[in-house]
Image (cartoon, rainbow over all chains, first blue to last red; front, side, top):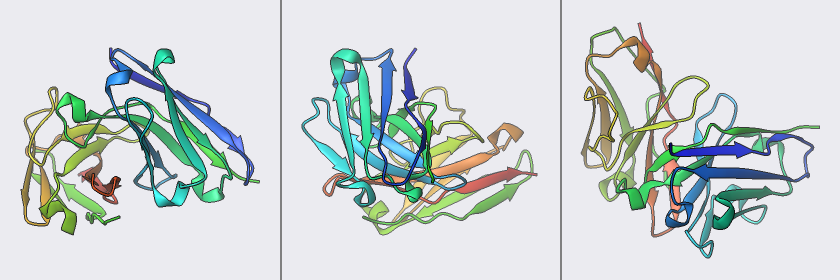
Length: 122
Length: 108
């Protein structure tokens, strides 16, 4: 079964750091771009970051540029999101998602994890 | 970056047809994608490249597009279709992926 499982969410104070993990199974992680998408409580979806198969290309939404870093370890079947200088407005469920281009789905996110909640509050 | 605009809510009775629109200048050049998100769950891709349906998605879900507006149509709406629906597109030149604000579909 193709699956993504996120972990690492929790409560952190403003200015703090957190590292999210996403473990992939059921497919060859090294063949796919991967993404992080977040959803603030009661709000819509927001793309956060993408990383290419080898980790050499990374793209971020403007609001997290310079604070968040996406990385991956294909040998461990995992993708990560290091979040520094966290702000109250970063509070959200963070989803790991597979970019489906190599599955024929174009620019869609074809596989999603269940999400992990990050709460930034004092 | 660019914006995708959706109505905040749509309501239909069971068996009727629901149409959810998504508008944005980028849609005249880029494909649109649609996701269904039931309460408390992860999004699920229901339409890709404007009109294509992934395997396992019921035939009552269809997509269409014209100019800067795309439409998700759900024919013969069922109670289980009550969810939020999001459109999405991408500008792979500027490496930016955008979602619409989401439409809450209520089945009366």
